[in-house]
Image (tube, rainbow, N blue to C red):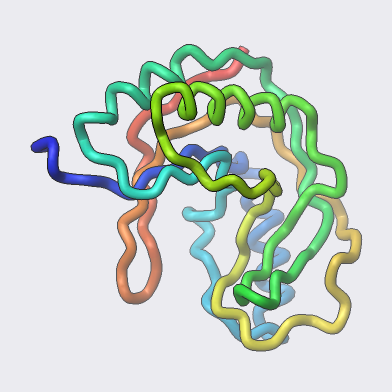
Length: 178
């Protein structure tokens, strides 16, 4: 790839197979009552840091920053159905975000900032998007669900390839925790 070519990148974590099956079951139970563009099961993830367009010559810098991030595996419980009406997003969030998740994000953000990457200044709000372009939200939002819990043992640098119907995600590199 030449220097001028850019990729749409982000760091993310993915649920394990057991959690993914729970997510699919939840999606199936909601799909008939909520109109929107549902995220394919293979693409269900929690974004840690969105980078946007990154030129290929900066990819090695990203890999170096991520390889220096240390942390132990941790569990996350997604236990709240939330709707962000202003942007038409239905998602799952944790009522209590694990400190290890916040630390992981902070270490990435710090390293990226030092390397000159311009990042979104909004506070990190962990969430797993279930549907976009939601037209009708359920009457009861922000309520507790049976927790969908999974262990985070790695994080990933991911490329997003937007298309007309949905984005396709491809993991470029992964790093283990612990």
